[in-house]
Length: 480
Image 1 (spheres, rainbow, N blue to C red):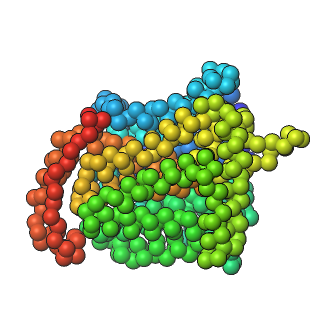
Image 2 (image 1 turned 120 degrees about the vertical axis):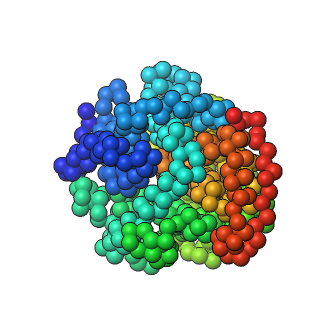
């Protein structure tokens, strides 16, 4: 077994995590135990990996997902019998199994294909499945949303420590930096915190998600007045300030896009802006793979209006994408498979490519098929959400948290164009949305419950704006 670098606390955390999760299931409501375990594990477990021959590596993702699944099976086994397969689950299944076809077509062997598909299923499929059985109604989704928000609030002092003292917490706790320290340096001084996550970009997106959830839960009246004995308004303000001070331009931009689209969609009672969000990544992928757009006009704009260093970083990514796209197009419909076969090497056999975006990594390894399945799997719950739930309902207590989670999946797909930050908690959003939307009678009941709310409460929630509900929701034949 390959032992990761670090001190004794790495082993204590990784293997001590197992009894901690079991204790959570034993002491807490099962839904709260799942939410707390996912949030706590992802925020504080070390970025470490134990390589076990013949089995998937035991790392942060497997420790989070597999251990929680085992705890659910041991302490709440009857919950599994409540799962009912739906046609809406097919995109996630196809995405999780796509690496098998890549390995098979490239003669890498059935064992390699099954191993790759298993690891992808652990990262994406297990959290999706857990959400399908645990976060399938408004009350349980609120538990998940509040758990994430509280987790982000808990991260505030850790982020400030690293912004001032530099990203050192992972090294101080576990004995090593989890990522290249140079990438934490910010233009104009200061540091971008990583805390205990893989990269500063992942931490920034995590904190942006907390802001997104906090603001909208407060707007819909679902956020408690006090959390951890502090006013929730104060916590939101601190979370916003912290996220802005982290100076992650991409995360802040995506957060603003999500808030603006969510607010305007509910005010204008239209999904047109969300449709634009869905289409934007498709346009990017198409224009980049066909060579119709080289990205130079965007990098030039950023150089003139924002920062020369950010422009150079972006253009560097575009240049690497170009050679990786050329290599991917030489492969099969199912890509090149693993073992670095999709990367670009010079005549000396030296790797000259750098992969950043999850989309280009997937395109190279799993081809057009895998890339298509990834995009569909991520965007599918958001598509169903805008199809089945009218925008007027997105600002209600019933649908508010789900609206944020749905739109965040759209944001996550955009982020995957430039970054590759796999976070299994985002797949909890996918599974919970599918469970909420797969039952037409449940949607009608939730809408009817909304219609029974008093006009006075509506005025309080929506700050005096009269809400005119629309019960006309047409379930798709793909749900059921």
